[in-house]
Each structure stands twice: as C-alpha cells, then as structure tokens.
Length: 239
Ligand SMILES: NC(=O)c1ccc[n+]([C@@H]2O[C@H](COP(=O)([O-])OP(=O)(O)OC[C@H]3O[C@@H](n4cnc5c(N)ncnc54)[C@H](OP(=O)(O)O)[C@@H]3O)[C@@H](O)[C@H]2O)c1
Image 1 (spheres, rainbow, N blue to C red):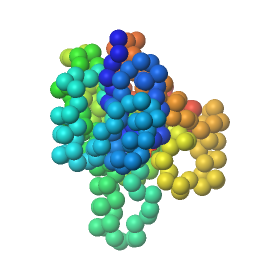
Image 2: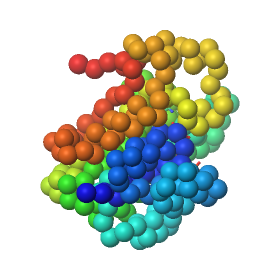
Image 3: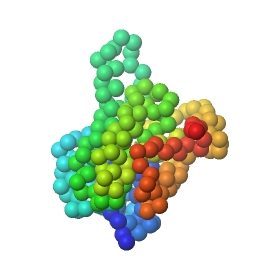
Image 4: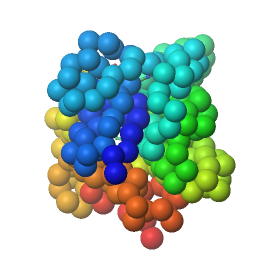
C-alpha cells in the first residue's frame, strides 16, 4: 500500500536521495525547502510534491502542517547543515553567540518545530527519522553540539509517540559526498582525510543514507526506536 512521506530539505543531497528512494518504493513524497526554484525543479525531476517551508519559521511550519493531507506515514527531518564554517574573531562574543544560535536553529529547532506541528498527522505505526551527524560524537563546535542536542530530542519524540506505535530514530551520517553541505569549502586534503578515516576507504553517498532511512520506515523496523544509527563507513565504530 502506498504511503505518504514528508522529507524536509528534500531538493538536494541526502534529502533528495531519500525522496527518490521512497518514490522508487511506490510511495508519495512531499519535499520542503527554502528556495522555490530549486525545490520546484527537484519536484518535477522526481515526480513529488513541493512545499516551500523554512523549518526555522513557526508560521511557515504551521502552514506546512495545515496544508499537508490529514494523515501521512513518515517524517524525515533532514533540513539542516553547518551554518558556521568560519572562526569568529577572538573576543567577539556577540558573533560567537550568533554563530551558535544559527546552528541550533538550523539543526535542532527545524526538527523540534516540524515534529511538534506535524505529529498529530503522523499515522499510528509510522516513523520519524532525524538526520544527525558523526559530528555529534566528535565535537566540531556549534554544529556538532546542535546534532548532539537533536539526538537527545529524539528520545523525547520516541517516548511521546511510542504508545502510538510510531518509532523515532536518528540516522547519523559520516562524510557524505554529492551534497551541498560543504558549500564548496571542502579542500582536497580534508576530503582525502575524511575518506582515509573510514574503514571502507570511500566517501558515503546520499543513497547509502537513504537506504538506512528506508529500512527504519519499513515494517521490519517497528521495534527499533529511540536510537542513533551511525552510517559512516566505519569512521566511527560502536560496541
Ligand atoms: N553531507 C554530509 O557529509 C553530512 C554529514 C552528516 C550529516 N549531514 C546532515 O544531512 C542533512 C542533509 O544535508 P546534505 O548533506 O544533504 O546537504 P544539502 O545538500 O545542503 O541539503 C540540505 C537541504 O536542507 C535544506 N534546508 C536547509 N535549511 C533549511 C531550512 N531552514 N528549512 C528548510 N529546508 C532547509 C536545503 O535547501 P534550501 O537551502 O533551499 O532550504 C537543502 O536542500 C543535514 O541535516 C546535514 O546536517 C550531512
């Protein structure tokens, strides 16, 4: 039976691959994003519905919630990214504060606002999946801290929605190529280092991440909740 999936930030990179994976599985997909032109083009390419929504804006998130169908099955909180590749000048606390707030807003609050507004429409037995990051385990300043906070927030979502049979998990990618994440700022040296850190000696692809998300939303994963799944080629291992 066809399901309906909402993928925030679904026009590019990982979100786009997630949309593509669910379409391939016969599901209906709604993608969101802030840039109407990029969103419309992706929607036309993929055969999905586009809804412009800045996930940091409560008004736009509420409008998204109102305009979605009465019920849908899977929410993928993918919108986000590192808003702060710069180093603030020493002593500039105001700039430091702004940089930290920007990452918390982009990565934590997008998920909090979207999940809160959309949860009443998620069908019993559905799934929520948040895009975390390997950075949550490695420091990496405000970006890593925002993804660590997202993983903690996931526990609240899993607790609250669990009685309805809705699972909530974090998928935490390592270095994933073919996205807009690095905004052209990834040097060849850094790229080589990130690949060297994996056990598989290659960059992750959006499709690698999409397959894990697909599984988490599948009938076989209904007892898997409140977890963070690391998908990073072994760049970070667990036990
Ligand atoms: N690539 C990696 O190596 C990597 C590693 C770990 C985790 N991640 C995480 O994976 C997720 C997807 O990133 P990506 O790598 O696929 O990069 P990406 O290509 O930059 O995708 C991010 C998408 O999110 C959208 N977006 C950003 N802020 C938004 C907002 N406030 N409201 C709505 N949409 C928003 C962007 O579109 P608009 O700009 O048009 O809004 C874009 O389509 C992010 O949460 C990122 O932190 C990525």
